[in-house]
Length: 301
Image 1: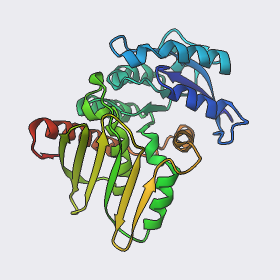
Image 2 (image 1 turned 60 degrees about the vertical axis):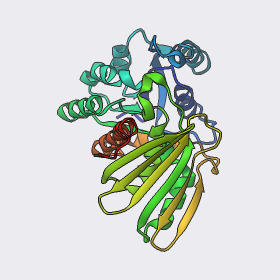
Image 3 (image 1 turned 45 degrees about the horizontal axis):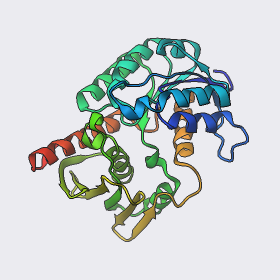
Image 4 (image 1 turned 90 degrees about the horizontal axis):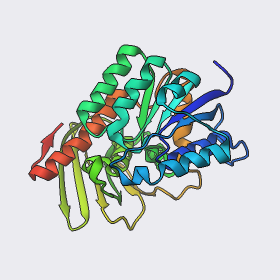
């Protein structure tokens, strides 16, 4: 394996393409992530997704101009000429198709959140990854926020009984309800609670969205969000002997740097920090929350 991996990007319709490239390519950056360099990017973009089409060209041009990243004409070129791939397309609906295009090249792939916009698509990605042996990881950067991980270290000897998280819950019509911003709160919840959620109940009041998950061991986790934003991500963690409050943005280190460190380790070792079984449960959690909100009834996972 080369000392410095050649990394390719698929999807420049998100600011994550700039954030990751800056952290990898700018060696003077305070939170520079070692081990790789972004050398090529395929812009992509979804014609029916305004946020995607309004940003894709600008971010691609900036990658080329500021970081000397070569622009590819198709995703296959990225996979063929690079050692690892960041699949960053903002539109979760295209992740399965793009992954199927990339996987024959056998390179490790990070798929930005959400893995997909429904469980069926996510499970198809997982099956293909398993059958081909291609290392794959998907996660929200909020899972690795320094403020959250520092607080979690206090609970190594104190079993967590629950978490109440809150933050913005913007909705995007093309991205299937809670999959757009709910993925961040769900990832925070699972970082604290772990897997094993048995049922989900979701409701809305005004611009407020509330999701309650009940775990099979009797613990309960909630996430609450506003469709109009207005406040930052935060969480209250409850253990047997202590409770603590976390303002997710309190630490200076960028979320993306903490995530990218885990991604680079996966690129180098082939072992993801978050297993696909847990990622699939998170996708099903969000899908079940959408179903519960529509039916006004709890939904079993």
